[in-house]
Length: 392
Picture (cartoon, rainbow, N blue to C red):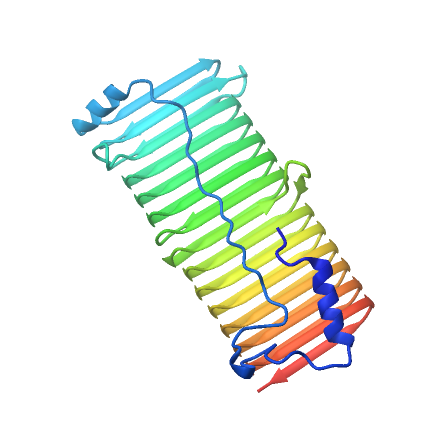
């Protein structure tokens, strides 16, 4: 998932840090009319995941259509084996489809669906829930028209809550394992959310308002947390991936908040105890954090338009903090090793900061205020210190 190959990046920044020659013409600032063309740039990701509802099948489409034509609702419940409970409350023309297979006399699966508004076949709210196992719980609340919710839970003591109000939202929650928890809240219209969790005690909280936002959370492992919030004008994209089938992740935390229009934020974390936080406001900002290892920390904040920020960390206890206020700024931090720290703070327009550290206990602190400032800091070894302050 890393868009810049680390070995190439370190070769590049080493050349800039230590070679006895000036940078190529047009590498930074607005020099030569090459606005935002840097010697090392961020290759923005464009990948995204999409909700794909695939709940239990409708048993009788003719009955469903007849009910909706009459302004009524359709409810279908199929439960097998033992100790399952389903409750459906419908007002207006809505559809709920439920399947449950209980596997315990002592732990009950429960499903509650509350639907209002809706209407004809074209305006119905649709909720689909499947649960197999014991002690699983699902709660769906839908109001408005043309909202779709799909929940699939397999295992023990998983909990999913979906709240949709407004129009044309889509939510898809899949949980496998034990003690996983998912919350999806969608307000306004045309928001889409996808949650996939596999393992134990993972927690996902996805909240969307405004229009046409897309949020995706994938957690594979144990005790991982994902918290994403989107609001503003809309069309924001936020994606978190923690762990993978071949390598479970443990105790990682990811938090992303976006307010505005067409912002994009990505967090990828593998390993144990990593923590990434990203906040973006206004429009067309891009933030990405890729962390692999143990107890790495990343914090990125961007306030303005068309800013870009990237943190890549591999190792133990690395810490990167980047803040940008203004427009068209770019900040990059690459750290490989142990307990390296980077701080980058930029204010104004068209500033550029690059920090690369390979080794242990290295420290870089970059502060740039004004506009068109450029800083490259490259350190290899241990206990090196680089401090840059540029004010225009």
